Amino acid sequence: MRICYLDAFSGISGDMTVGALVDAGAPEAPLLEALRGLDTGARYEVEKTLRRGITASKFRVDVADVPQKHRHLSHILKLIDAAPLAARAKANASAVFEKLGQAEAHIHGVPIEKVHFHEVGAADSIADIVGACVALDLLGVEEVHLSAINVGSGTVETEHGTLPVPAPATARLLTGKPVYSRGPAMELTTPTGAAIAATLGITFGPLPAMRITSIGHGAGDRDFPQQANVLRALIGERISAPEATLVSVMEANIDDSSPQVLGYAMDRLMAAGALDVSFSPIQMKKNRPGSLLRVIAKPEDQERLAQEIFAETSTLGLRIYPAERRVEERQMVEVQTPWGTVHGKVSAQKLFAPEYEDCRKIAERTGAPLAQVLEAARAAYLEKT
Image 1 (cartoon, rainbow, N blue to C red):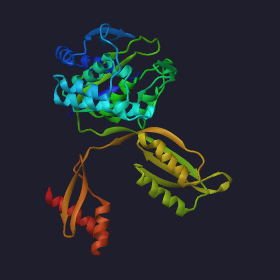
Image 2: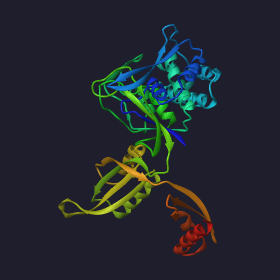
Image 3: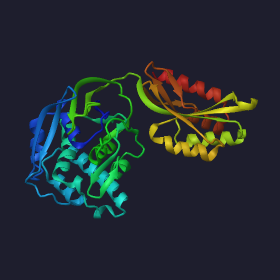
Image 4: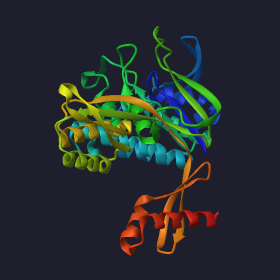
C-alpha cells in the first residue's frame, strides 16, 4: 500500500500541502492543468525556495483578477463536480469542503446550507484543497497519515476580527487530534490545512512503518528564525514491521475507593475505548495501602477517558504522558471447533491466539471447560495451516 506521511512540525496549510506533494514527486504539469479546469480565473505556479536552508516548493495562486466573492458549500461542490478531475480527487476534495462546512456551521450556529465560505471560499483556497487531493491521486497515495500538529499561538486577523490561535474552525476540525504549540506566536495551521488533515488523515502520531521512496517539503509564506517553515511529506510503501503508535498513559494513585468501585471503573474505561486498564498495589503516604490505576489510551480519547476516571473514581488528579507503543502486524482468522466458530489473531511469527470472548461464550453455552475450548481452537488453526 502506498502511503503519505505529513510531518506538520511547523503546522499545515493548503498551499504547504500542495507544495510538499509536488516536491515529493507529484507531476506539476497535470496538477496545474487540473486546477485550470476549475475555471476560477486564477493562475497557478510552483517555485523552488529555501526555508532555513531547506529546499522547498512554494505553491502560489494569483487571484489578482479574480472577484473575491462569498460562496456557499453547494456552489463549491458544483464547481468541483464540473471540473475534469479524477473521481477519487473529486470525492476527496468534496469531502474536505463538507467537513469544513460542518465546522463553520457549528461555530456560527447556522445550517450548513447557509454557511458563507469567506477566506476558505476564495479561489486560492479552492485551489489549495483541490490541488492537494489531485496531487495525492497523481502520486497513487492510498492512505494519509500525520504527525501531531503544531497549531501555533498568539492571534490571527480574520473577517470576524482578531481571534486566538488556533482559530475556531481550526480548533473544531482538530478536536480529538493530537496538537501542540511551539515556535513563533502566529497561526501555523490554517482552517484549510486542518480540514485536509481531519478529512484525509487515517492516523495521527509517529511515522508508520514504511519504505520511503520520496520526500518533499512545502514552504509556508514566511521564513522563521526558529525553525524551517515547511510541511514535510514522506511518500512510500507500507511494510510489515512492528508499527510504532503514539499512546497516552494516564495514571492515578488511589487509596480511598473500594474494590467494587475500582472494578466497575475498569469495566467503564474499557467500554469507553481504553486500550488497556490495570491496577497495581502500592504503599502510599501515611502507610495506606492503595492502587495505581494505569490507563493506556489513544491520544484522541485522552480527554474523554480522563473525565470517565474523575467520574468513576475518587482521584482528584491524573498524570498523563505520551509513550510509544510498538504493535506487531497481525491478521484475524476464523477456525471451526466442534462447538462453533472462533476468531483469533495470527502474528507475523504465525503464532495463533484465540479470542477469549468467543471461547468464553462457547464454554458458557455448551458447558465445555474453557481450557478445552481454547485448546480445540489452537488445534483447529494448526490443522487449517
